[in-house]
Length: 468
Ligand SMILES: Cc1cc2nc3c(=O)[nH]c(=O)nc-3n(C[C@H](O)[C@H](O)[C@H](O)COP(=O)(O)OP(=O)(O)OC[C@H]3O[C@@H](n4cnc5c(N)ncnc54)[C@H](O)[C@@H]3O)c2cc1C
Image 1 (cartoon, protein in one colour):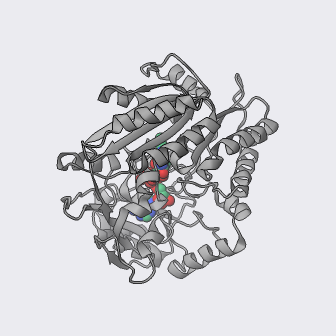
Image 2 (cartoon, helix red, strand yellow; image 1 turned 90 degrees about the vertical axis):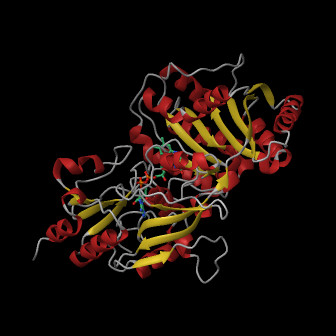
């Protein structure tokens, strides 16, 4: 039988086909938990090349693994078997001219999120997706995971920000759905189907994204809250009081703050008081006539009267605002530098955040007394990164990982939440889906996969069970 890599080299040329040491940087996932050596890494430069690669792989029975920035946290962008080709979109980085009248832009799937933000800046437009990995994560990967981030509660997740898509299907056909309209009910919502499909139904090659005017005014505050219940009540009040101006509602715990300050010496905490939990609140408006400072100050007054807020500071400069955000954004890094950690990406109805955190702490404490709970995340949409560090002075808690994950997933499911909020299932959480989702739900997904990828060459072992 002919060597299939010869055909791939012919399609891609020397720059587009990497093997051996050149392929190493693509091999392991961000957390270094998943990834075997693939047959090679294809780096196509156009949709036509992606289609040709997918066709050649399909004919040769090779697995195809789409990869963006490889910052996914569930092991979905790396090979699970040696006869796989990683298709990196990293050479497809064209950014079109923003259409200010329609509020949209056409981009290739390999565009890095931070590069898109930068390109939009001079136009007074923004793409409202922000996350800690934005310097590496690419548009195709963000679509593949249906990413959320810190503004999802106001602007939605990727599926709400994608107007149109171009996708190479598992048999190598190209679906051109690059329409720049929000309303398009001509049949099933195909564009949404590919959002969160984790590369199991096709490869996104281009997208039309929704843009918003950059806010001309922002008011931000860092608050020390009495406890998690107070943070939840105050969050609900802010959603009513500040309405559509509320653009950030993030939380972190004192354990997380302590770790961040310990390991990142240039971080500054400028308030006099410490508490169990902190809120980062931000209001934003495109109009300079809205009295955001007044709205924020009166909300803080109410919070203090109620005993929810015990201390706080309103940012008086852009630099101070940036410092507040860094305290929140460095939560993962502070914990990583502390050493061993376990991550859980949970969402619950926002009103249940405090009770989930408390009940989860009880469950985790029963599994391993002294385990440190470091919950942080997006209060506005109930997304808790329920991360754990081992008891002080210990490092050996990875053996309990499955027990912690199962207990927290079952708890989230019981109260109507999700064990996979914004990171997807990847390879890491398929077993959890088996345990926590109904047969009907899993069967619908398996049938979708079977219909669109009958040869099961697109990212096998990710999102759905390999053998159904
Ligand atoms: C420090 C840090 C902070 C993070 N914060 C957040 C956060 O706040 N919110 C959040 O949602 N996520 C967050 N993440 C997770 C991660 O950044 C997101 O999941 C992001 O969307 C992944 O993008 P990527 O380009 O790195 O995708 P990859 O990791 O390369 O791929 C992710 C998945 O998408 C598939 N895929 C990649 N490209 C394509 C394509 N072109 N077509 C089809 N499928 C494709 C892959 O096969 C894989 O299954 C964070 C990660 C880190 C490391």
